[in-house]
Length: 150
Image (cartoon, rainbow, N blue to C red; front, side, top):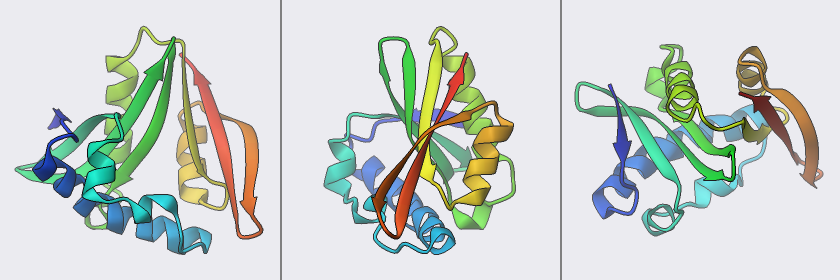
């Protein structure tokens, strides 16, 4: 089940952080860069991020989440995370499909991921996203921005 989450609530932000840290640790291992900014998030930073969150629950367990901001007619996905215990269950796809349908009046969607994160790159490309720009953060990290027109 997918439901909206209020990240400004302390307990909800704690729950989101328990999901986020192991998910981004896997990405850090995939791309070979251990200092990803999402790994430095805290309950307080999540509470103040002003993103819209939806969680994917199996029974009462939060297994995945997506967050975004909207500006004008564009969705900017900030997080699409699945707990490693729930990889390969279609949760990321269900969350992305949910946001696409929920925000169908928007004209485009953007999302960024580590350029070396081949599973994420493949996921976004198979969902109609095209690479728009690559930004080199430092010699060990580059980020690719993807865009999809609705």
